[in-house]
Length: 267
Image 1 (spheres, rainbow, N blue to C red):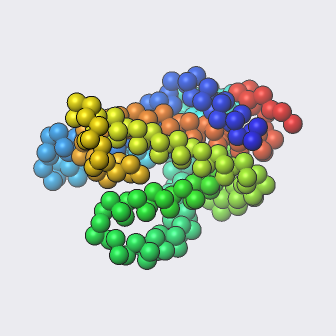
Image 2: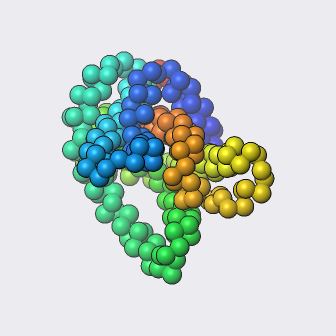
Image 3: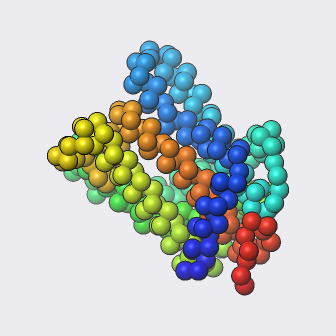
C-alpha cells in the first residue's frame, strides 16, 4: 500500500507543476462541452455535425497530449506545446491501433453486459447504472492503457510489443495497480455524484426533497442536458484525467527501473 499512496501523492503534486497539461486536458474533454453548445444554441444538423468532427479531433489530440506531458515531466524532459503536437502526430496511429485492440479485448464484456441488461434495455437509467457497476471491476485494469501509452513514448515500440510489455509489468505488480485503478475510479464516481447533488440543490434553492429524483450512481443519466451539471462535472474531469495519467506513468517508470527527478524511489 505504500506505493499506492506514493503514486497518488506525487501524481497530485506533479499535475500542479505543469501548465501545458491543462490545455491538453481541456482539449481531451472537448466532446464533453459539445452538449453544452447544442443545448444553448440549438444548432442545425450540419453545424452540429461539423462541430462534432472538430471536437472529436481536439479530444484525440488531448487524449495523447496529456499522458505524453505527464511522461515527459516525470522523466525531467521539458517539452513545448509544439513538441507535444509533434508527438501526437507521431504516435496517433499506434494509439488508434491500441484502441482497436482494447475494444476487441473488452468486447466479450460488452456482450455479457447487453445479455444481462436485455430486460432493462428500455430503461435508460437502469442500463446506465449497470454500465457504471460493470466499470468498477474493470477499473482494476486501468493501468494497462496508460502503461501501453508510456511504452510508445519511452521505447518507441509498436502496438503488439508495448501491450505485451504493459501486461507483463502489470502482472508483476497487479495488486498495487488494481487498487490504484479502483481508487481513482471511485474518486471520480464520488465527484460525479457530488456534482449531481450540488446541481440539484442549487437549482432547487437547496430543497432537500429535490434530490429524490436524482440517479446517484450515474447523475449524468438524468442531468445530461443540464448545463450547470455539465460545467461542474467537467471541471473535475479536467483535473482527473492528468491525475490518472500522472499516477500510472509514475508507476510504470518506477517498476521499469527508470530514475525520475519527480519521484524519490524507495527500493
